[in-house]
Length: 563
Image 1 (tube, one colour):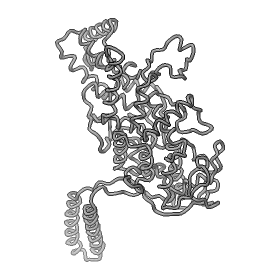
Image 2 (spheres, rainbow, N blue to C red; image 1 turned 90 degrees about the vertical axis):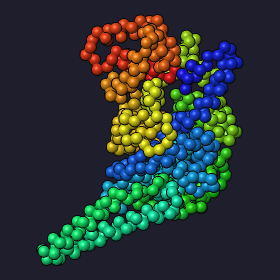
Image 3 (cartoon, rainbow, N blue to C red; image 1 turned 45 degrees about the vertical axis):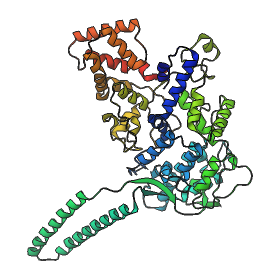
């Protein structure tokens, strides 16, 4: 986005430049790709994956994309913050809410027991509940409530009783498949399935009964049975696929939970009511008595009396704009977390955000119109002496693109990017022209998409990921130099430049403009001319000279970094 701003902000004076920037920001916020971009940030927090299992449980969630598409839509429609949060906690229980949003919880890992004994079952259940508590508290509150699972939190004022007050809410919540079609279609599908099951039973019974016949009659019966099986196979093949559905949650009970001594659900301690955290409640805490308690929990999270939820969200938005957050531990605002570098700024942004009705686009405007956001990444001698670490945000920190932005940019400059919105995920994203957001991801056995994404620091979705690591390893450069994906992009980009009748100098200039938003410097033109000439002399290359030159530029830091 910053490079686009730089390219589009060439105006004759400051006033017209400001207007160009304002218009551009509005264009960007109205673009469907805005929702896709910011949805990906949230999906990291939601540990989104198409494979829901963990520890021997590789259950697939083939309709997980409905939740992902809802998140995209929520950002594009500027869904108010309190609704964005509430719908994911209790969208099935709220007026005008949507059950699809509860995929935030239903798509989490479900831990499988190692055996059928009570200890293994209790352990697996405890791990699954802990995922829900941990993801909920880190995502919406910026607290590590999970640390109070076995004992009182050692650093934050969160007693073990509070952990099981929250866990009790999720213990009353079950995961289901919610049809997204008319009830009549569901009935017809289930009736067809029942007929097939009945036919299978009839054939099985006939096969069992035929064993009691004489050998002569067995052969005759076998022919009839095989004919029936062949017909049933055809019926199954031609039967309609399952109706469209979404993975959601719903209330299954209305019970409080015992404290699990040392985290063992089989060792029951005090029975605690479902209610909000003591540290975030003013006055007497009200127990959650309605159903699972999710609706009341959602109300507690978005209540104006809760000082954390808005600040945690604002901090995330700031982090993705600048590469680092005001609170550098974005999912831990507790004592072990980092203190805010600019507490007054965080408070002001939170107040502005809340005052706008929780408009995320309003928050973007506040940040992107600021002189801080529009500052150059070029360091100054004075600035380096005063604040070498740039803790005061006196300049923009250069940072490497994440894997989604980088791959999408590669497809964009070669004019291959498929900008269609939503729908099922791609098994191997390197074989698709769709945005990288639509790659199929797994928690356990990596998909073809996972193998590519994880190479470039994509988080394994086993737990909520507040921010990504930034590792640079040799395998990344091997991919850029040798992978079929990169070679194909270089060849695609080179086609138009190879066929052009313009001079080499002009084409080199155009290529720099396409990739970097600037004209080539004289020394770059000279290096390029020398490279193209020398490359043509050596005929044993897989790529043409122009394709090789394009690959060099696509692998350059200038293309891969946001400045």
